[in-house]
Length: 143
Image (tube, rainbow, N blue to C red; front, side):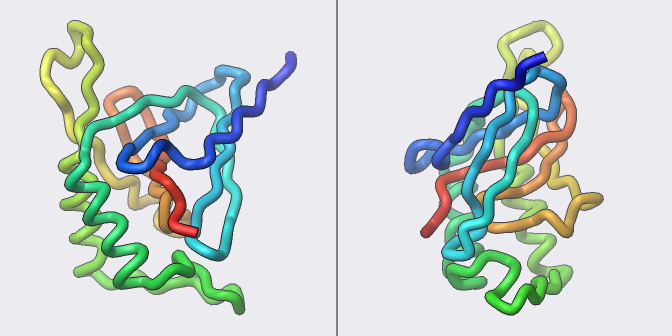
């Protein structure tokens, strides 16, 4: 079975997307991690999500507080998360709405930070849990 590769050079400015992990034979690739320019991929389907204020806070945290290197510096040293920083990410991500216009979700449902995948957390790449399963929250990379 052939797999289709789709490069997403970040969602449009001011937008958030989640790629929900699923066997779709479509693999989305994305650049993340600030000026470190990491590349990740997720097989699944792409869903736009709502959260303009959350996006502003995520950008402020990852680009301002952490600088433009994401969570791994040039020497390969990983960032050590403090509880107050995780609390901030939890609060921000919980304000992002997941809304499928169907009978399962007649109202918006918040997504949740997937802390079991904390080693993957980075600028423009946050593992999340949605009502439809695990995924990765993306926004436009800052580089």
